[in-house]
Image (cartoon, rainbow, N blue to C red; front, side, top):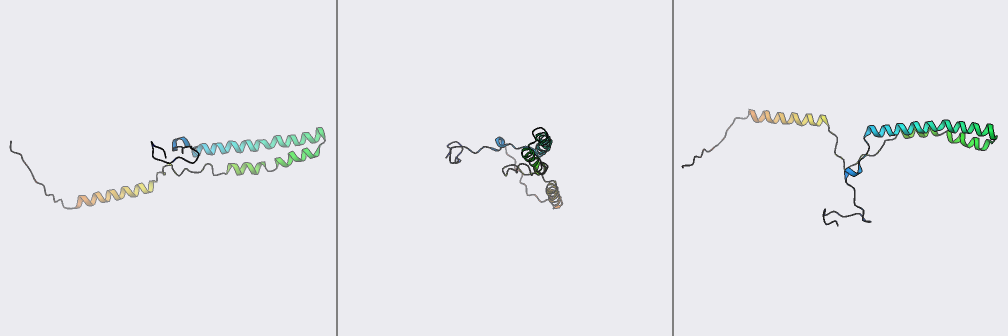
Length: 133
């Protein structure tokens, strides 16, 4: 148990990091990262195909040439799978997203309640008190 915060520490003495230290990529940064990974994986296909062709032409080694070609075959599929990935999972400790429809509904309820309060007859029991000097 931590004396300062009153929270339990994990088993091996490491503390759980706060939200600020676990900062994740924004959705646009995550998408950009996946686009770059897609381009790199797709770009790797060309060197594999060229190496496959060169090993066959120069060394006449069809085994290495076939292996390099077979490696290049699934690269486009892998690139698409990486690009279509979901990205980083949402942190449950992060705040909820602003929901405009809910905010509009709450504002309408607030205005309706204010209108009802104004339409009620005003009946105040006030006591005036004056002190004698």
